Image (tube, rainbow, N blue to C red):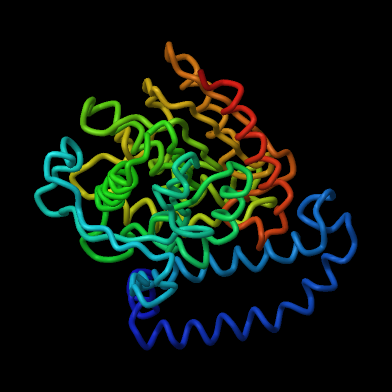
Length: 370
């Protein structure tokens, strides 16, 4: 019966009806929340501002209903949209896509992304770093343009770099599960290398699912030595590291930090099921890297919010990576922040925490780089 009801909601008419109903109910409840969260002691955390309390409630509702309807949002790759900053990228040469990327059904495809604050120029920006950024969204939502503006700007300013935000294929689209997003990541990375940029000028960055993708790219580079050069570093915020555990809604909805985070169980279940193809185990190192440390020549900087559900996983992964001989790893905690505060900090009210975290990342990279 539940599956039948869910199917009705996910039909075209069902989505329209459900969206109208959800918006109506949310608007009816909003006045209550506006009053309820006025006292400091009634907010999700006493250190939070009024805006942070309200926006976390709104985001929870948005994610819950998005997952219930399993929305499919088109990627806006049209060159006429901000054409001065958009880059359309064709797949690289075939030998770049080896191992887990050599899939019989999912092939490398044309991808694209946006430059922030302006396109990289080999002549003008020769000495500047480039950041390859992967947005969050559980691999099922996000586009890397408007949603990534705050993150990309924060990275550009504090890492003193040009940022390329990739609009990778989403697994909410049919036939775009793993390894589609990783194929796109490899395509984009090769594109940056081909801009005559020394790989040691490139930093990989990502939030949540994008952090997972960044780690997978580092692993792929190490697993296929000589195919792609190693970047300088990876700056990863709130990485989603254990999709296997995300298959159970209770691991999110009954988590001790559930009150101070906006993640909801049905959203992570949707993302995990959509991303992992049926023949592949969800605990595969490329999908759930939490308990699968590896060596990387790149410096690895991981930040998490102290009040987010994925905080312990981020710290645990960093500690696992530190145990691998030769790795340079640092973990940074913003004590009162929630999930993916770099990606959505402008919405959740953690702009200053995001800026502080990335500034700290830049200082560590400079101190550690030899």
